View (spheres, helix red, strand yellow):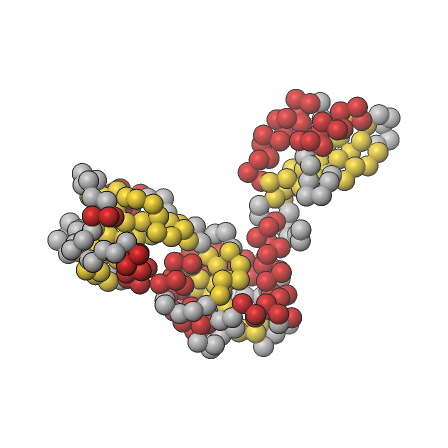
Amino acid sequence: MLNIALPNKGSLSQDAIQLVNEAGYTCRRYSRELVARDSANEVEFVFLRPRDIAIYVGNGVLDLGITGRDLAMDSGVDIAELLPLQFARSAFYYAVPKESDLTPHEFEGLRIATSYPLLVQRDLAARNIHATVIRLDGAVEISIRLGVADAIADVVESGRTMVEAGLKPIGQPLLKSEAILVARDPKAVQQPEIESFISRLQGIVVAREYVMVEYDAPEHLLEMACMVTPGIESPTIAPLSKKGWVAVKSMARKDEVNAIVDKLAKLGAKGIIITDIRTCRI
């Protein structure tokens, strides 16, 4: 039985559960259950605080876990990142009052409030700066106004909360984070059941980035059309009953699809259809 940790609350939890369900596993949580068992696939999902997942996995209590890269790195536990999952993306920045001219290189002797003390301590050490790191479990943005800190270090998603608190991010991000799949040892991928789990998740992650483009095109324009939709290896092409026309089918990146449709229409393609892909292996 494979034991996998999932976040127990928040959007990170919802997206992780959706991912494993789309990958063909049964993971249903009706209330506050700590465990959900998928007997058919011999997997047991354990729901834990996102911040604790790296600790359980790193200590070998559980085989795999889904958590944020920022939380995994701040845990101080030596674990292996097996797969980035491309949701819950954020960046970790220093921030100061919007009227301040402070930079991270001027933090000597100051107080830095954060919920990620280990990440901040590592960065300050790399800059050879001695500052007081104040650990807070939440409401980090208000710490400067309350006189607890001179600057903060926090996760930024939309940046709205920081702006509302009268703060601005400074410098380059200390870390770019997203949801990740972790294991105690990178060699875990050699286990057949773990390899299968990773492949299934990767199939969903990749499928979310692509769509299938289908259209009809005149044969004399086929070469130009294929330049617009080159596909992964090459497009699938089939003759139509209408002489001089062919049907083309090709994968394309989702973030490029509107421009692709414009180009195909301008070229003279007809019957252009875009469909989502449920899962794929490329």
